[in-house]
Length: 334
Image 1 (cartoon, rainbow, N blue to C red):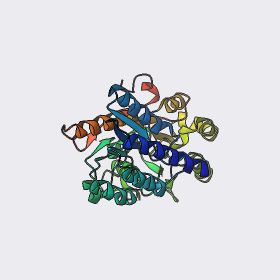
Image 2 (image 1 turned 90 degrees about the vertical axis):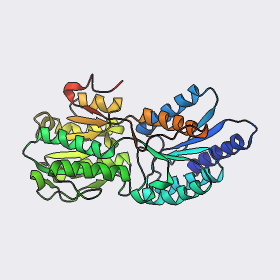
Image 3 (image 1 turned 135 degrees about the vertical axis):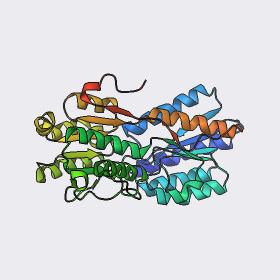
């Protein structure tokens, strides 16, 4: 933790030099939920590509909590960025309600803010200019459609989510529940399935990983040991697949059930390491986002706004990729 805090201090110290120097270069911060995460790494790469294509007009500062950092640490980082007077902030809120406090200060300081990947709560959306990212509800509905195609008669299901306060994962859960039940719920995370549409949520579910990848694998192992006849298991993020060796060890014993379509294991996200696991028979479907595009588009939008151009449409959706073992080689949009 000391090493992480020192890294953050050094990064923000470097930011002070960049902001206070004579150069006219803008400094835009891209703030993920956590670092050392293959999903957010792609957003970082998109951010850096935008920086390279700007011909020196702005710097992409990629800064966020450590691997197991939570919403409080992310809020502190954003508060520090506001204090340093960066030129723009693009953040994926880990805790939507808590982030609103930091973004109120950004608004008062005149710093434009975009959200990406995950948005604020409806009552706080005036604190950011626009959301750029996935239509999270549709991730859920598409995951549920895959599960229904595999298990048309329904059954028991367990949803594995991220943080309980993460708006994007709650929207995905609502999409799953609404699609499986055939009924539209009033708000995220939707109404728990109690036989609706032939589907019932297993006892103890949903499971919350808090974006802790080893924890997500352990949850799967523990749940399956107690519920070997569950019909569907649906993670709303790629959590277990992001540590492929551990996930392979956990899922390998269920490959036969997956192959026979006795277990509908469908997972969010379509990173290369995930598609590889699907090809190995460790899932029956993946619904993916486009994080590289999120990182790229948020930076370009911040530059446009600073240059006096129009703000991006709110929301700006970056699209989805729906993959199955049969379409694995062609399902990702280029």
